[in-house]
Length: 255
Image 1 (cartoon, helix red, strand yellow):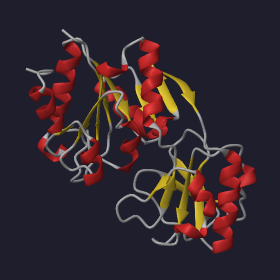
Image 2 (image 1 turned 90 degrees about the vertical axis):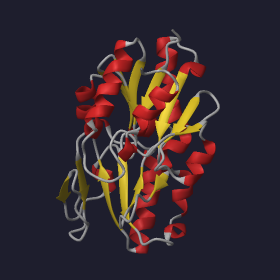
Image 3 (image 1 turned 60 degrees about the vertical axis):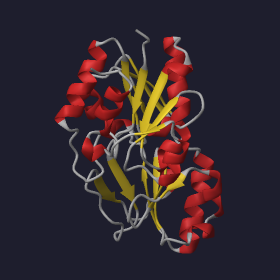
């Protein structure tokens, strides 16, 4: 049997695009089975390590690419977690303030955002702390940066061109976060001394473009962005229709 190395995005891939926070039982059962068959499974997510760790553990995966490629978990241990370039974050925050845009940061590997603005919107998946008068210089690092910027006005902040960022769904803020999942996947494959061509990646969204490369086999979910589907080697069913299970069976990786 040719061993495969599967890397799964979380949101819109493992977790259905229709909402919620649960991985369907049939998907969990399929992942258990492919691992019993000797294949390798890992997460490849833009979520921070603190956000994704419980999901990794619940799936029984020993390895993970998180923080958009800036975080690496090997054999259940966090071995690398790089923050954003600090000087670029400082420049960007200065531009935010000049434009009158509110901002907040993940200052560490914990699930909370801190902001100086009382009007900053809250999050359903993390705590929000208001610290009036705070400055970026009060913190030594930035893991992620949130900016309350109206759509179409991103060009007012030229430093954005030097950083990876996106706006998810209809959120009022943009999120500046690492977006090089391929780098994290290569790190794990190199650690395992496994050939890149044996890797298989599953994804659906903007931050999955970086891992859809010619180095390995790329599977887009049926709910994926049209542009991502164009880059894919195969398009499976939507996550809400257990597209992962369908693809694993289609290629004979799952009975």
